[in-house]
Each structure stands twice: as C-alpha cells, then as structure tokens.
Length: 399
Image (cartoon, rainbow, N blue to C red; front, side):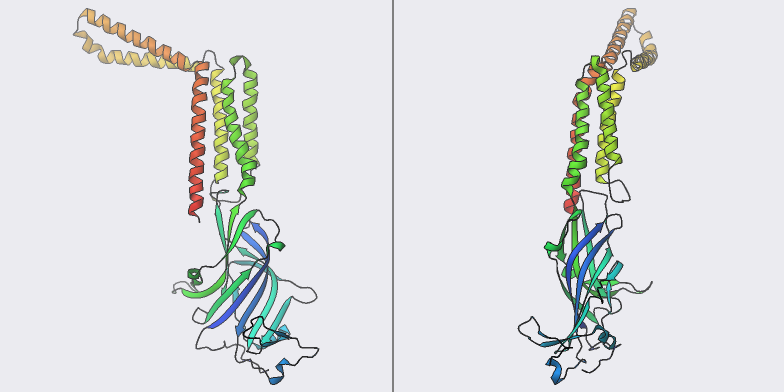
C-alpha cells in the first residue's frame, strides 16, 4: 500500500461523499428532566480515497490478514482488515454529532473499533459507542403532546460544496427495552439534509450537509389517563352528589367533601410532570378538578347557615336601593294627586316585599342545592369538552 496525504482531502476540486450507516442497538433512555436521549449505536463510516493504492498481493491471506467479499454482488471486491492505528496515516472526515452531550466508546480488551480497506480504495471504519444527544422538548401540552428529537451527523468544518453525507439507519426492535414514551424513527427529509450554520457573529451562514434520523415521541397517554385524569374527573363529578344529601345528614356531606378535597390535593401533589416554563395540560386539568371540589365545599358552607348573613345583607341592599329610587321620583310625585301618590307608594312597597321574598328564596339551602346540582355538572362537562377539544387539536397540529 501507498500512504495518502493525511491533511488534504481526496479530490479537492469536488465534494467527497461520506457514507454513514447507523445501527441503533438500543435507545437506552429518554430523559425529560435532562432534555436528552441516550443511544447505544454502531457507526460505520465509508469514504473513498484513490490515493490509497493496493498491490497485486492485496488479496493474499496469511495469519495477519483477513479476506472477505463485499456484500454488493456487483462489486465483489477483496477487502483487508487493518489495525486502526493505520488511520494516523490516512485522511479522515471530520465528523461531528449535533447537540452531543456525552460520548463514550465501548471497550473490552481493546476498543470496539475496526478498519477495513477495499481494493477499490474504499475505507470503512466502524466503532461502537454510547452517547447522549440533547433535544428541544416543549412540555406545555404534556401529556397530550408530541416531541421530536433530531439525531444529526455532519462535518465540523467542511461545507456541502466540500463534503456530502449519505446515510442510513437500522433499529432492531428485539434488543429494545421498554421506554417511558412511544416512539418512531423516521428518515431525515431531503429538505432538511442541508443545515445552515453561522461560524462567527456577523458572517453569513454556511450550508453544511448532514445525515441522520428523527425520533418522534408521544407520552404513554393511557397510563396517565388511568393514574391522573380518571381519578381527578371522578372526584369532580362525585362532589356534585353532595348536593343531593339531605340537610339532616350534614356531617356525612362535610366528611365527603373534605375527603374529596384532600384526595385531589394528593393527586396534584404527587403529579410527576417534566420541567416546563408554564403550567402543563395535566396540571390545568387537576387544578380545575380541585376548584370544582372546593366550590362544592363553599356551597355547602353557605347552606349550613339557617339564618344566613347573606340574606340580611341582601335585604339591606334592597331597602337602600328602594329608598334611592324614592328620592329620585319624589319630585315627580309632588305634582300628582294624592290618590296617585298613594297608589305609587303601595306599588313600591309591593316591589320591596317581592324582592325580599326573592332574596330569601335564592339563599334558601334547598334552593341553592338544586341550583348548584344543575349548574355545576354543566359547567364541569363544558370544561371537559373544551379541554380535550383544544389539546387534541394542538396535538394534531404538532404533526
């Protein structure tokens, strides 16, 4: 073999093509707290350097050489396994992984790497690694959300006019352990295989070729529905049953409402949500259910007052309003006959009596219970319809 120039890329007049095959042995973890995904991958890099030449004895095997055939039946070219130290004498593409947080190559006795050179001057380098990639997660709609994490491999310094990446990936599901999310791996769209990047402030962005895949994730919604949504919704609707309990059994009604309040507070306190800049969708639902139970408890507090202060307050306000109306119409009443004034006075007093009776009726415990039993379920059901319609629509928009 003839050594190639180490620091000069092959064919400087045209872009070099670099193939990257990714075998995703396992997606080990999806961390909502760390905004990252951890992979166990096997990288296979291929590029052609015509400066690497082979001799006529390239296909001869001995104890130090391994000969095999390339899988492509059209080529069927002899290859040779080399020591990875030979890379020190070759030009190697400058590979970078976007948003990389941590990378560790796997080792046994030696690092799990291999180097193979084909007779047509194609160089193939393989290595296995565990790496963590940062992702941009937004959890405002959690758990009715969809997240996307890009795994991108590109060049750190060579633009698309100097290096072009071509890649593929394979993910065997038999080696995958359960994850806290449902996920799907898709190929990187063609229009996203060129990424602009600004090297320095004030400079125009340069376009770089990338390859990789997208990981689309959705939360395990069924588990969250069973653990959070169903109990919270039931607590809200069960609190409405308290309106049907008779006044003679007020102790049982109080215990029921206090217990429901404590249970809903416990659900909200033990709720595990990923970090977010605001309130998440599941927190909004639990808070709404808590407000519903607390409102039922407040309605009960009003009904236990047989002589409710609200009634007397309503009567005072009613009398005050009637007096002000009398003063406003006093001057108009002066010019009328005495009989007409007496009729008007009787009508005003009759209206005052009716208002007082209406006030007593509105604040009567049984009347309040009947109104609350009709109004509260309607409002809570309307909230549920609006809640699910809005967030399910937002989830479809994220596609």
